[in-house]
Amino acid sequence: MGRATYPVLTVAGIAFHLLRSDLVTGTTKTQRDEAVDGRSSRWESHRARRRTELVEATLRAIRARGAGVGMDDIASSAGTSKTVFYRHFTDRAGLYSAVAERVNRIILRDITKAVGDLSAFSGSASQRSTEPRALLGAAVDAYLSLVETDPEVYRFIVAAPLVPPSERTETIDLASTVSRAMGVQIGALIAVTLAGAGRSTEPAETWGHAVVGMVRAAGDEWLRSGAATSGTSRATLNEHLTELIWGGLSSAWPTEPATPDKE
Figure 1 (cartoon, rainbow, N blue to C red):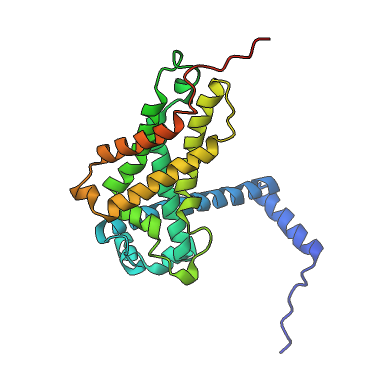
Figure 2 (cartoon, one colour; figure 1 turned 60 degrees about the vertical axis):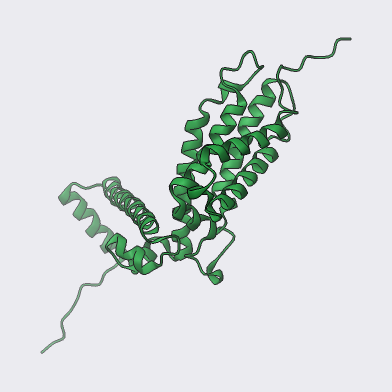
C-alpha cells in the first residue's frame, strides 16, 4: 500500500488559495481587516465594562466589610473568583490602583461641581460673581464629604491595606492620585484669581498642594479620633480649615487688579 501524498504548500499556492477564497466569498482584504478590528474593538469594550463591574464590586465589599477586606471577600462580592480579578488587574496593586482612580474621579467631579466655572471668580472684587473664600470652602467640603460619607473607602485608599509592603510600588501612593490631582485643581483656582488681578501665578500650584496637604492631614485625624461621628461636624471642620487657609491666602489674594505704575 503506497504512502498517502499531500499537496505541497508554497507561498504562491497559499496566496492563490486566499485569493480564490476572496473571489468566491466576495471578501476583500480591507473587509477582513475591518472584521478583525471590529472584533478587537468589541473585546476591548467588553474588558473595559468588566473592569468597571469588578471595581464597583470591590467598592461594595469595602463598604460592607471594611477597609481591610481581603481578595476572597472581594471575589465573593463580585460573584466570581480571584483568578478573574488577576486576569483583569494583574495583581492586588493593580486592583488598588483601579479603585483609587475611580475614587479620584468621584472627588474631582464633586470639586468641579462645587467650584464650577473658574471665570466666576476671576478679576477684581467688583467683577467676581462668586467669592473665592466660599469656593475654597466648597472645594474643601468636597474632600471632607468622602471622609464622612465613605470612611471605609477613604481608609482603603489612604492606607492601601489590600497591598502587602512587598508588592507596593511608587504608584501605591495617595499623593500621586487623589491628592495630587486635587492640588492641581485648587492651584488652578488660585492661579485664575491671581492672573485676573495681574499678579504672578508662580506660587499658585504650590499653594494648591499645600492646601490639600492641610485638608488631608486634618481629615485623617478627624476620622481617626472619631470626631467624624461623635464630635466635630463636617461643617464645623470645614469652617475651621477654610478660615485658616483663607487667613494665609488673603494677604496675597488681590481685592482689586494691580494697576501699572505711573511715570
